[in-house]
Structures are given as C-alpha cells and as structure tokens.
Image (cartoon, rainbow, N blue to C red; front, top):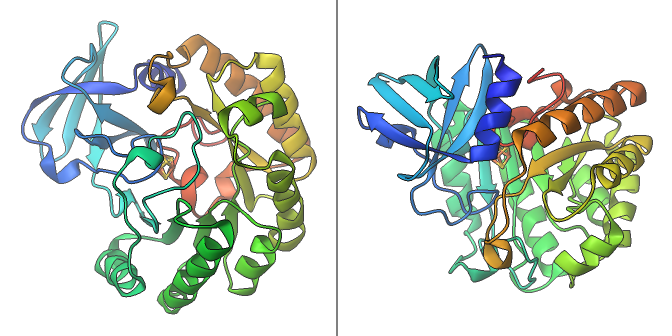
Length: 323
Ligand code: SF4
C-alpha cells in the first residue's frame, strides 16, 4: 500500500491493537497534543523514513504485531506493512518536546487538558529532562497550557526557554500568544513558532474556543513571519469540527498568503466532542492534495521544519514529507 494511503487510513482509525512481544519501551504518554491524558499511550511506527503516531486501543480493528527488537508488522485491509517502532525521546522521536503547564484555565471544546489534573513543571526539572535526552534529540520543543493568565504563562515560558538555550539545539515554541510573544521569543533565539488558529472559520473558533481571540492569533502569526521568516511559522487547523472542505481551503490559503505553514490536524474526539467521528481517510487524502497545492503555489516548504509537529509528522499528513 502506498505510504500516504496507509497513513490516511491509520489517522482515520486513530489506534491499533498490539500483539506479539511487549512494546513498553516504545510507548509514550503525553500531556499535550492529540493523545493528551490517554491511559494506554501511543507509539510511533515508521517505514521508509516516514512516521505515524498510533494510539493503543484493545478494540481497534488494525493489528500491530511486534516481532521484537522494534520490528513490527501492521495488518489492515488484508495487507501487511513492515516497519519499525521508534522510541520517543521526550513525547516524540528525535525531539525533547516538553509541556510546561499541563493545566489550562480555558475551555476549548475539543481539548482534554482542562479536565486533567496537570501541574506546572519546575524549570530545573525541565532542564534535567532535556539533559537526560540530549544525546537522542536534534531539537527542543515547548508547549504549554495557560495555568493562570496568558501574560504569566508567557513570562514563565520565556524563563524556560532562556534556561534551555545552553543546550545549543534549535528551539520551537507553541503557546497561546499575547501581542508581544513573537518578539520576546525571537529575542531569546527561538527559531520556530506555532500559534494555532485551530478552526477553519471565525464562527467555529468562537464556538470551540470561547475564551480566546481569533484576531489575536492572526496578529501574532503576521508579526511572527516578519521576525522568524517564511517556513518558520506554523498554525494547526483541526479537521472535523464541522467545517467544509471549502472552509479549510480558504483558511489554508489565508495562512499561506501571509507566509504561515498550515498544519492540518485530524480531530481526536475528546472532551465535549467525544461523540464526534474522526475524519475519513478519503477526506484527508483530498485535503492533502489541496494543502500540497497551496503550499507549492505560496513557495512554502514543511520539509525545512526543524522543530515541533512538521518536523515530527506523527499526527498529520505533511506535504513534502508524506507524499
Ligand atoms: S506531530 Fe506534534 S503532536 Fe503529534 S506526536 Fe509529533 S510533535 Fe506530538
């Protein structure tokens, strides 16, 4: 099966059932991202230099057989696909991806984090975590919920970034931005930022993220491109919140027009959207074609990403990396 079709099917299913040898050393449990708070964890399967993150679920119809030593076989739609399990460094392979505050005062409807008993990590603890993984990573990524206020969270994340600078690795940051966040991160040497617009339309944003500002995120994205440059600014847009494909085409076009790389993130049904479905593989493949065309026409290239999701590629179809 062609990789992109396989990955679209796996993203549609969202999970696999494990059989064979124990997979404990390959399982990661996350405090942010699509698998936040998941009990069974997830693992990374790669084949031919490409990667997908798979949730673990006893009830999944897709079976991943671990032959031992990381060699794995996926069976789906009557086909077998051979690949390897990749150990996560911190959260994902090859990056120390840290969630600073695992709690959030906001209530985005698709997000599990506000319901989790998360805590804020101490700076010394974060430095120690990165230090313990430094020989296995080529980048550091930082994300965070908002523990008490946007301003207070930004100030704390800036302290974290300053403490991590001595590692000499590229640092990417994805937090909820205030007006000065891009300039302050840039001044500390951060190389990439991801400020998530989350939804394809403003109306959906108001519905899904009632406490956040659509205009504020766009403003942060615009000023970030001026500072960090093209190919260094990213924004997640969730697929499956009730938007149309035309809505997604429009928002991807608007992001690309200001030099921002859209990251199309299939919905993981959770929180108050737990009853929704994941987007179909056919829809993801069709959106991939639109996404690829928009990026090509805008001269944007996710292959250049050094940090965060476009470098990891675990959860999304990434033009230039998966196609
Ligand atoms: S794509 Fe992003 S959210 Fe998904 S595993 Fe990789 S770094 Fe984490």
